[in-house]
Length: 325
Image (cartoon, rainbow, N blue to C red; front, side):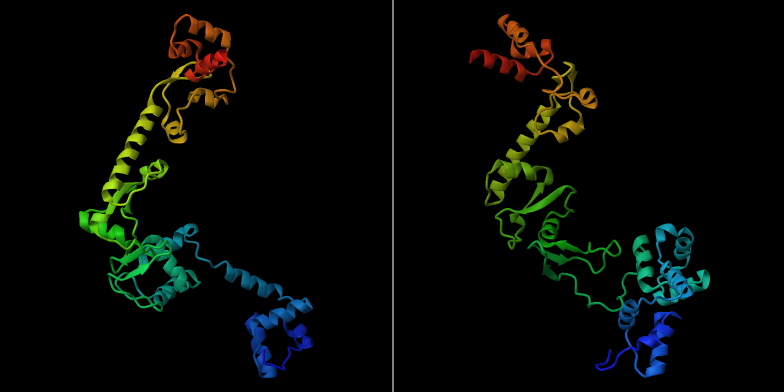
């Protein structure tokens, strides 16, 4: 609002209710010779408790409902699929308006094209920054270097034409894409050393095991050695969790399910049936230590006692330890 000029309250009370906010601005400019902003009129109207009439509110509500939620518009989506041939968005909007009576803006057209993967390629977009050539490098937020590997993304509205440089160098050196579930490590820890001999593929399933070993590596050979140790530990742990065992609650023999093998870091002691009933080892059953010790005195091994009692070996071992104290 120009300095020294004010919106007359009396005029606003008389004229604000009629028409849209732009109609009010036009009438104000014709009356007083200067044009207030929308925010100025909104602030003054709110101070005076003024509102637009119902007819204007209904028109504004109708316009607000013209939001292209393509998932809920099968008829409009089918029309777009048939008539969108990569033409300019304004021309497509003209055809759409002639068919359905309301107009799409450029963002709504681009949203539909991105949703269906029909975004035009090979043509420069309107506005925005100029394209950079293939091979351009830039730093990422994580401290790595990313490189542009293609002029256009294979998936519309994505950035899959940019790759981490160390991953791209590894793929070029090995002649194949990086397998799913793997990552590339800098063997010497230097994120600027892109020598292919310094880049090592590491399965993501071993990353946590490698970090848990607490062993540092400084080159490709030591990194592969740590990977081998992590692989042995992961395989042994998998075998340990896959062997048949005795349920500590019901005494039945069971093999842990895949979900249990992924969930537990230690061998599960409770079978899936008891878990489904809400029972768990150590909470749903108590064992008679005298019976356990009597079987031990008969010369049975801890495993044989556990199988006969229907408990785990830890229960037998704990009973013997308490008697020796």
